[in-house]
Length: 179
Image (cartoon, rainbow, N blue to C red; front, side, top):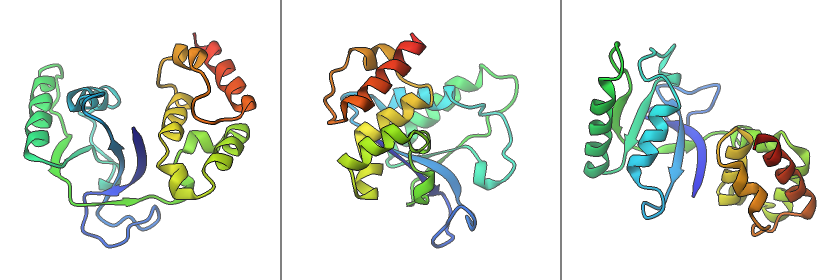
């Protein structure tokens, strides 16, 4: 439903990109398990990176931060199932969630911020930064611009999000280019 980027996993107070302390760069995901089960999110997580590659530093380490014993069990089971597919050990750790600090504004919805037409449309809908970052529409469009999502969804969707006709025309053109 929503994503935001930031820092998690450490005890260092008030991490920032230039003073991250013992935290790792992280993505926080709000989801409805009736629509996207936690197991599917885990599958996407494992597919999106090499869990055997050592990190250069803790800032870039691979972690799954779980919010419950049920999530912990499912994450560990998915990790164990996946481990047989690699000839090297998985380095990704499963840790208990202890908090999240949002990254600076310029890190949020990075792909979307690079498009002036779409940003103008989103700023009209969400003039406050926090509402923009927490927007489901912004999360979907940012992901699409990063190469995720089914282009057919953008070609066929009606403008339900309140975006301008110009913004939808651009999204449809981009989607048609990926079909």
